[in-house]
Structure formats: C-alpha cells, structure tokens
Image 1: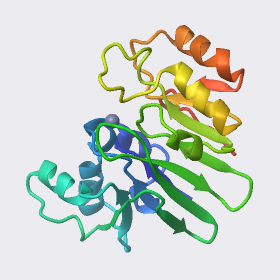
Image 2 (image 1 turned 60 degrees about the horizontal axis):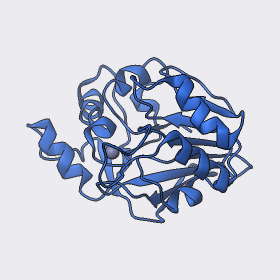
Image 3 (image 1 turned 120 degrees about the vertical axis):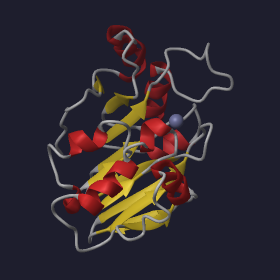
Length: 221
Ligand SMILES: [Zn+2]
C-alpha cells in the first residue's frame, strides 16, 4: 500500500526517489497549513503534465475545503477533479484501501481543522500519525497500541504559543506511553532544536524505542 501522508515543501521531490505518483494508492492531507500541503498542487501538475499518465483518478483525502484551498494556491486551476478524486475527512472517518488496509481519521487540537491518522493492515501492525496537535485526548486514540507512532514534537516548550498548538517531546512521550505504542518516532522537530535534549526529554518518559525522524529514513514492518 502506498500512501503519501502530508505534502510539505520538498516531499514530492523526495517521494519520486522511491515511487511514481502514478503508483500511489492515495494521498492524505492532515490539515491546510502550508508546511503540510504546499506540494499537493505540484502533485497535481505532475499527474497532469508528467511524462507518464495515470489511468485512474488518485484519491486525495483532506480536511473540508481542501480542494478549493489548493485551487486558489495554484492560480490557474478551478478544479483538480480531472486527476484527483476529492474526499473530505471528518472525525472518525474510515477509508478502506485494497482488501485489508483501513485508514481512520481522528481530529486533533490545532489552530485549524486537523486530522491525525491510524493505518491498520488487518494484522497486528498499526502505524499512527499525530499530524499537528496540542496535547489532547485524541492522541491517545490515534496512537492506541500502535506499532509505530509518528508523533510531532515541534516545540521544546510553549513559551511562544498561546494557546498551545504543538507538542513538546515530553508531551509526545507521555501520549505514546498512555497509548501503549511500541515505538515512538518524533516528527516535526525543528532544525534548531538540540536533538540530544529532545531525545532526553522524551526518553525520560518513554524509554529506548524512540527516534527522531530524519529525511530519507526508512522503517520496515
Ligand atoms: Zn499545523
């Protein structure tokens, strides 16, 4: 199953090192902050003008209004429906892809409408993604018994946020612990954050199975 989850700047270029956009089963956009969706319009242009063509529409799941939002940012397009199949998420929405993979949307607490994601494959493997979120109960449901919990840790503290919109490493670790996740992969860690401090803050609560996500990392299950 091949799903592009969020499409921030540079993600489409990196994606093409591994898989053609035509071989994707779906795109999932958690929310419309630009660092999570800016490459979606590029994905559309690649699907439309790329050398190879895709026979079927590519399902794209995102928050309500995502289609019009992306059209406005493309300047010239009034509709993406000639290449994208438009789906809007809501809390608890479930999407089946293929015969065994199920995607579940869970709304988080963020400054805009945002949906975390659980991906189950019909066996014991669950991949969870917090999207962007302040500390909230939804994170426990997203990460519940996850094999791998990708959880944001975008701030070291909340001194520059009012209200809080993101998680600290300690909060990410707390929710991964409460959710009983097996492995914690910290995402959205800012480049100027001290990685040693980030891991120490999270590791105090969660233990050893904790990593920071780096560009190009591969995890296999
Ligand atoms: Zn955001």
